Length: 415
Image 1: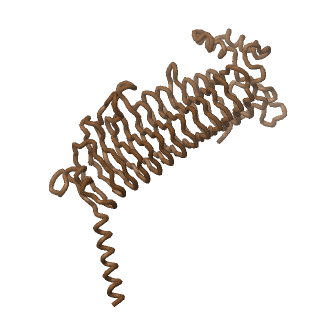
Image 2: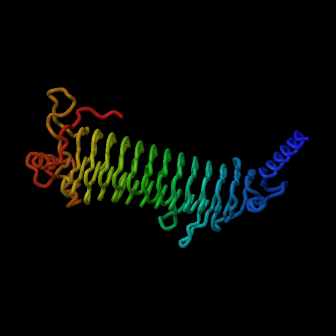
Image 3: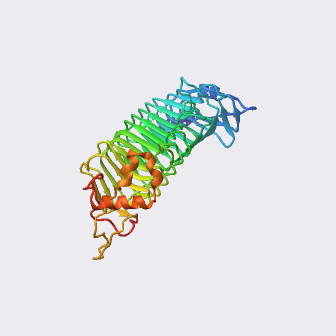
């Protein structure tokens, strides 16, 4: 009797679980649901919704049920027809994968997004293609999410008519990995967010920044590519940031840079490549930052220091063929430059210990002149500039006398 009761309970539990974890299909014809929203309305927690290939002209699709999982296949397209959002979600433990969403409404008063998340937890957005997006993913007050392998682009022709591809506000513990974002205002934007990871993303040809974040502590940015953006990457008012193994390339313009650091404290910047930028790094009021084993290659300026920046350490970096390695205003402020390789260094190493016997002065008088009189840049590469740079090196007057690399490397750093 007990055994029979056990079997009955077991089978009942299986039937209940099956009933609670259905797969609901959405298709253009010949199935119960032809509307994604209607399928969601009928679904229960734990259900999956499979959206067959086809074009579904819907907008403001609302999800407020936990443990719901939407997925499509190649050719599954949500066309919002420039009417509001694609999806609006207020839920936990959900996923949206393998879909194309297009034609998000452009607005000057509302931040319409292909997928808008508000107070969402334990979620996944994966393998989603967004076309003609205003905002791509707009994620607010959420945590414990995965944003993986998505392709996001917009068509705005100005910053005012464009949003951000991946926008996080007041969100924590989000992993943003392997995304391709372009033709947006900012590729990736984060404000008031901590303990997030941004890794292996390719952000290019955006109208403002490839990456832009403010007031966001304890975040890590690794193995990303930021190229051909109007102003590169801006990092502002944040603490304990780690940026490593990123590429900042061809961010070029009259007010452009690879990386802007504004009021950044206690950060690590290492193993990055800054190549073909107007400025590799602009540091303004940024303190206690370690810069090590970075490559600065063919930039207009490798590094510009403005404002009060204290206790920064440059070591084992490669400065290769930049027009200016360093531009500096103000006092040295306990910043140190040691054990770096400088392609312009012309010293010698008589004792063969791998370090130059003569200290290197990276700040040239010509960079001082250009900062004060930008028109003087036309004299670049002239004999006159070589003469005044040499005279300033012998008797420093305008450049910081104590700003030297006492142990310049004779060979390029390998990392």
